[in-house]
Image (cartoon, one colour):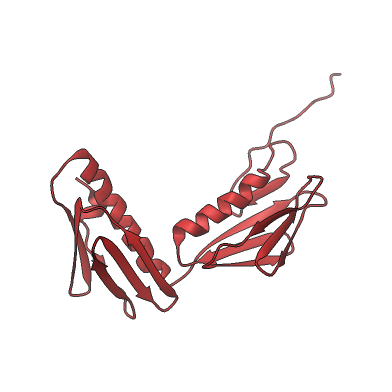
Length: 178
């Protein structure tokens, strides 16, 4: 039994919700999201509340029950207020530039690394901070992880790309023997 799936989900004001043919649609002030759900879970929309129940209780349907509830909550939250992730770039000579729909990173390689910004996301760059925001939590997190994977922070000097709240465990390095 899913504790998250059992809870009723309240629909915020200025938000429209539809469920048709296995596709869940959410429309709000910041845009529109849709997601395909398997028919193992019944989704009912009544009186500004959404309830989920499995058709048949199995291990697979119990797993999907809470997952689908979390996806719906994230969709409702995303169309009303954007999700944001911040990345910090640390290192001497490391810099980032945004030109149009492309981010160019200079992070210690012999060449510039260029990444195109996916549709639906807004990216702003200030000095060595990249702010990624959008209504889809999954795409914001995926794009932030893609940028971070280019140059992960190393444990000796902490150089690289890291999340704003990430703590890099530092190693001691070589010590002079006396």
